[in-house]
Length: 173
Image (cartoon, rainbow, N blue to C red; front, side, top):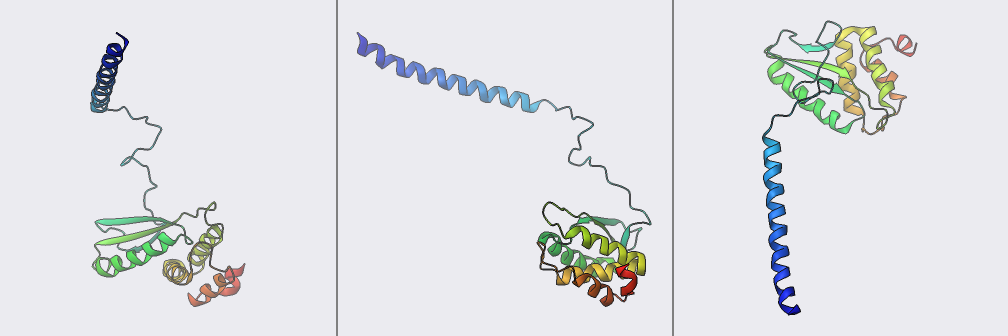
């Protein structure tokens, strides 16, 4: 009689396992259909707070454009370097018409790119010494010459300042 018990226990175990799997799938579908209550203290996609664009920002193009792209960038990030080129193309095509404005905000990530903080300070220095035009000229040049991933020699920063038409002695101080 034992062989008959073994032959029936395997199909029963399969049926029970199938029922449990089916029940689990059914219950997971039910819980997913309920709307989740978001924690108001945790930023959610589409609900991230950003500082409004102001006159203190580095703006290229028409500040009143219908489309304003706010970029947070790390000068040593290879993806940011590539994105910079893309935004320059967008500004060439649409910025000249006044349809798009580009706002640049430094966002160095020291844990990945330790040199980016000094480069961000250099960008701000360029803006302070030469205004918005010098800021953008300096920014474009830094992205042109940096190999990214901490590859830019800090000795290049004053050379970029000179390239941007800034007073290098004031830049050093």
